[in-house]
Image 1 (spheres, rainbow, N blue to C red):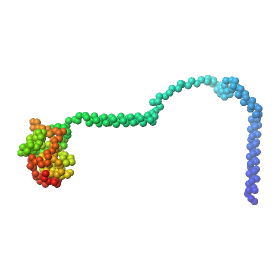
Image 2: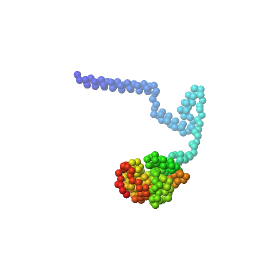
Image 3: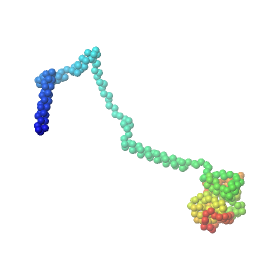
Image 4: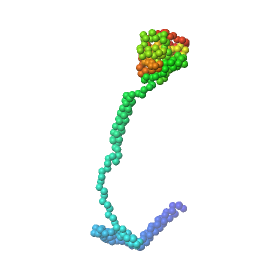
Length: 287
């Protein structure tokens, strides 16, 4: 037998049973509560409306709440009228916050102020007097006798880093020729037996080291060569080594590193010193 033939009648019977049960529940509920006619509901709505319009007394909920309080032994709490609203006061724009445009404007102005402050500080620092001492000022090197000892200890050369200078011995036999070439500030030290030379090469400004074997100054950058008095002997340098103004007071040598005197021209050779040994740098030779 086809299963559908049995299933369909069963479903129909089940649906009919559910409809019957639902109708019985509604009947039971109606019998318990009763039916209210349409006219009665209309009269109730009309009565409530009249009560709302004609009386300002408490409504049903308030009465019911009061009854519950009375049963519990309490009393009705009087209704307190609400306080009137506070008058409106416009807020301060500064308290609201900074608008984006205001923020950008203030940032730009702040940047300008910061930049001008830095520029002003740099100008003041540039114009402010520099403390005395060091390169660019007058340096008290010491007693000439002590300097000559330092030259001997350095195998003919004494270097003073605070003045960026070499000090070498100048022979008294060369003073006659030196007086025809050099100025009085240079001769003041030469007559005491020393000469102060600026360490920079007059070609391109490299620091010129001393060559202990040749007893010359020989630049490792481009091969310029100078004798111990700073007079040019070879290489591309346009003149001899620049030197500083010197003064001797009570046997003490003072070198003014703020007064650089241009080196002697090519061909100057007051000491007649030639290379005393192998060169440290290969120069062009000659003048």
